[in-house]
Image 1 (cartoon, rainbow, N blue to C red):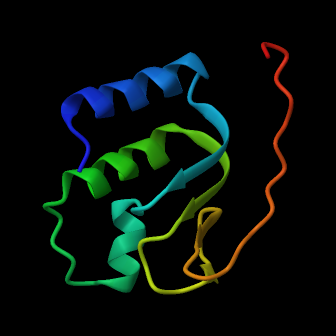
Image 2 (cartoon, one colour):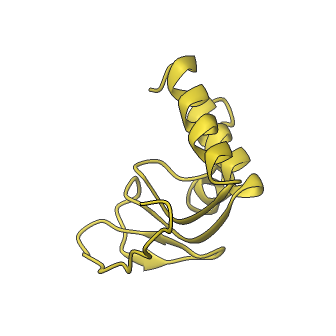
Image 3 (cartoon, rainbow, N blue to C red):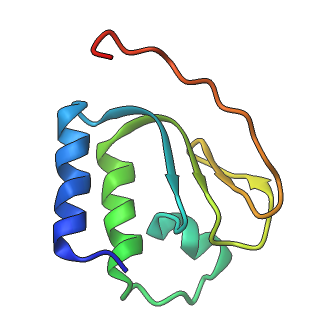
Amino acid sequence: MPDYAEYNEAIANLEATNFEVDYIITHAAPEDTMCMFHPRHEKKYPLNNFLEWVRKNTKYKHWYFGHLPVDEDLWRNQTALWFDVRNIEISESVDN
């Protein structure tokens, strides 16, 4: 699990892009998405709740995560990947 320094680093990185990124790639899913698959999922996991905060505050093209044992396109431009592999387009930044 991430510690507070890692959460703060994630927030700083998002702030540097004005909370706008092409892709988010994580192992875990935001809390609302986890509840779709596990309705009785206890909302005590700080990481899922943090990722839910990221979802609500970040503009992204697509979010890929691998926590669930399914390959499925979900809602809110999110995809669970278990065995599937996807190609992603990476846009060139003028700052690179």
